[in-house]
Image 1 (tube, one colour):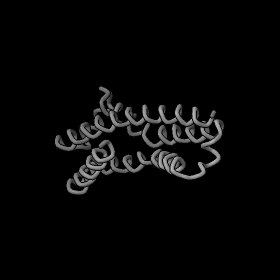
Image 2 (cartoon, one colour):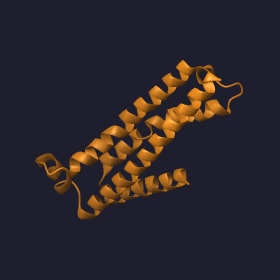
Image 3 (cartoon, one colour):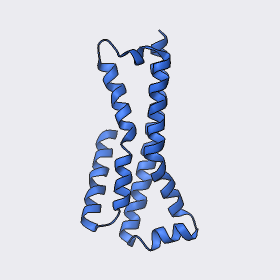
Image 4 (cartoon, helix red, strand yellow):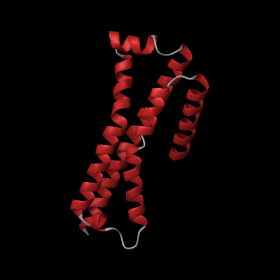
Length: 141
């Protein structure tokens, strides 16, 4: 369900950006959002492999993989979160970013997308922590 809702929101966001000619920079950030997904898919494929890859059978390799996933999460998703926070601050930069760049409709879409993907990020981060703990526990066996 989470993947379906995520995909639907992403498609709607890109359609809006294409039709309105606004939020192009946000859509670039959306592409960067996918950086940790590469590592997440590697982990899922590793669990499907028989035998499991060496890194998934060793505690050190498991920590290295999940460390890379967290780094990709931070680099891919952190800048967009920071931009959203800065855009809401009552500073000259935050006001300029919102008032001069977006229509009222685009501002509503922007904040809706930012709130949705922030909540999704928190959920995914919780999932990553669970996967990390699970993988380390299995590697210790």
